[in-house]
Length: 143
Image (tube, rainbow, N blue to C red):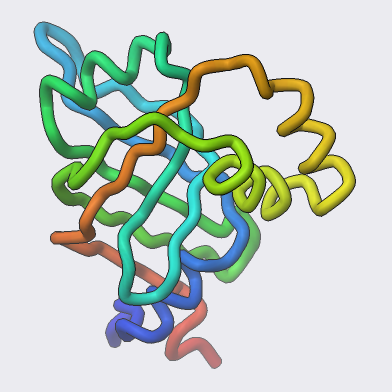
């Protein structure tokens, strides 16, 4: 019996609304694990936005890669974990980059309100190219 998702199942699950947890290697300690809002289109890159002064930026720049894990916390449990290299770290444009992610997580009204409240902050857009995948859907093959 296999619980591994197909590529289509994996992409559909990852593209759905979840809070992701990123894992970044850190020197002299365990990996740094942090929640993020992210976006993903099937077959594309994973991206998220973070404050330019966040401590995780230093780790991301040093390591050049990270892992993202998303899960469904309700039975039947499933998850997607993906690891890969960072392909870009660039200044985020609030309208182009933050607005779609804020609307994804809050809806249009609250998302736009969030973008307006954070308009003075310096944000970075981080993009990762998926390289290695791990998946499970424990609802597969159940009777």
